Image (cartoon, rainbow, N blue to C red; front, side):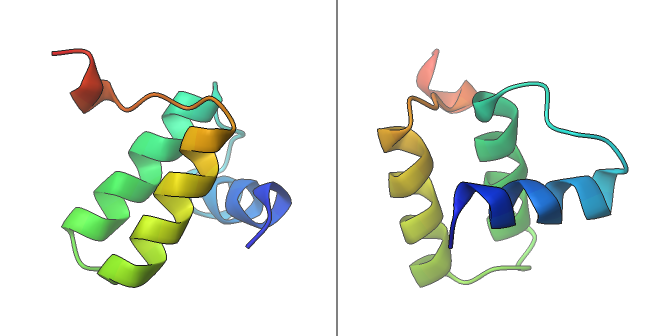
Length: 61
């Protein structure tokens, strides 16, 4: 999955672009928590976005 695909899904569901790469990561974390994506896809997305510089809101604690 590319960053373009991840952003497109976000924009389709939220009707706006993500404010940041961190917001994009939080969006996919939420999708995992509610069961919209499985653990394998979530791990791939998390690692990809994390390598792009994303920091989860959960990592600030």
